[in-house]
Length: 367
Image (cartoon, rainbow, N blue to C red; front, side):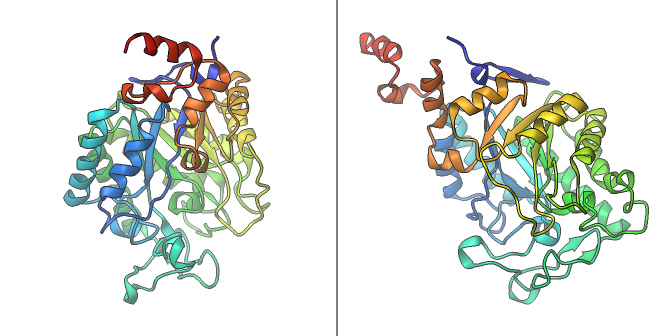
């Protein structure tokens, strides 16, 4: 038997063995932006899962780009060295391609980590001044950001480029830029957060201008043979925010600049109600794929292997990403392969855990 979910896909010089992606998932376990032993354990066991690609959590391109003080960063030699140590251990035992999601939290930065409650941390208490396209807090109780001037925007762009060069030195296989969920680039794209009256606000062309500048700068700094993707909103779930039409237009512009895929997510620019259900964001990936002519990644409460297979086989998306589902079941790709009648990759040390009869018999004869 064969399964579309377990067919390979080529993104520039990178061939993924299947279409299953481990989504970036914040771990709130870094020390001054540096990866810790937690990351070695967390990434190490996910790298044995049989997925086609593992993408590291949202990683701040500067100290004030982080969501919380505990978020991962890639903005200093110490950050680079710490992540290099983690990757060195993981790669010694697993050959899964590994990417990284580079991000700037914008007005949603300087936050408490989730287990400490919700809300901004003031600059005097270990937080920092946040920035945004306009001086509008995400909600009234949160810190009011400073509106970025042109010098500030150029500084953010330079931080993305610096982090990109560090990612290249670390030998990471792929970069995904986080332009979704109300973080800095998403807030430039959304009229809910962007009230500028210069060439970076107002019309869609103007609101897209700065995120596209950042993308182009990263693409120029990233090796040509390595893929570069973008996570962006298919909608803000708010009639005054980003619309699916705008998401398609933005994706077309990204493709023209050398983007290799769009990870279609949604929400985060306001407190709008999101109709959560398995695959609730798949229609955005499907429409972007069809109308912008670019590969897409579907994400959002996808846990049933048959559902993931149907998404890929029907051409609704090229890749399927799991976040919470993978935390809940770190061997999800093994179980999906069993359900679909195919074989996933696994370390030889774990062959006794494989339950497919033919594979188990094969190894039983060899020991």
